Image 1 (cartoon, rainbow, N blue to C red):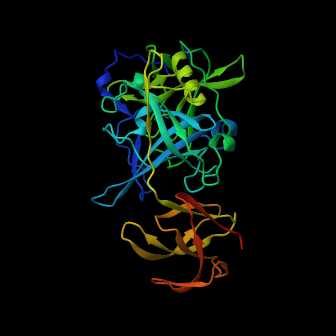
Image 2: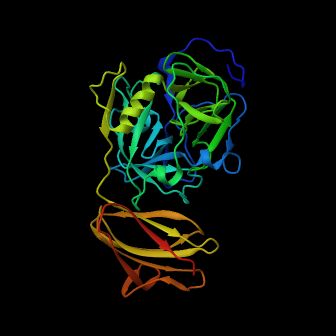
Length: 393
């Protein structure tokens, strides 16, 4: 059907299907890929930056979920890919909503549209509040036909919807996969974290009414990546499914197809008329994705040419004690989530490399190993992201 790598393959062995959700240690610079997801032949993926139309790039984003092991305190980050198809909804793989190999939903998941550098989220991040997926989907078996989901996003810290920031991608619900040039975009775990990659013109076949056989290169982290096909008639690429995983014994990867009925289900979700008791043949369910009542403190260096040095004092909600830390380097244009707290008061001091003070205040706090510094006090009135911007001195 499509131009691309020509392969000879045998019958499908579904019980060897592996999902493509990526998990990495949060503090690690290297990504540890846990499954044997496949590069078919040579690696044909390329970084999107400067290569693809930014109108497409910014609508595809990364789903990031930090999970802290309660016994060890070690944080891991689960990552997937997704695409905005409505102001407040993304399409992705169903297993991206679950803890690995369980039927338990993740918590504290965020969507970062158009992310090309995890420390410079140009378009912000949006909490995932609800997930819709086929009732027959099981996160234990990962059967690829049902591994598709729509997720509802909340507003960012400034009260904006994701679609208002970056726009939305076109999608079609069809009974069969159309001919056309193919495109996938996502966040592979074998590449630098938070960098977006794409592949064009790889072969995709419709294996059943709900499953796609994909001969594109797929690695953990690319789950939920859109499968796009270009329409000559409309001069645009449209989403026809999402990447779900691969078969460990065959040179093929898998996708879940956006059928005609699934397109109608999506419309019902967007219009607020969706019900688990609707008349659709394929039944879908809806579940809330919870977020802890915590404050995420993100600090951005607004200067494009100078580093900023950051020190802060905050109340650690896990130890219930105040902790002063610093100085940390914030690179030009960089945004970092420095800490989480449940306390509505925190203190901050910022300076440049020449010791010129950028942010201070009336409150003197001791920073272990550095001394005492005047800090600005911030009062926070609601849960969620709290953004502090460091101006250019």
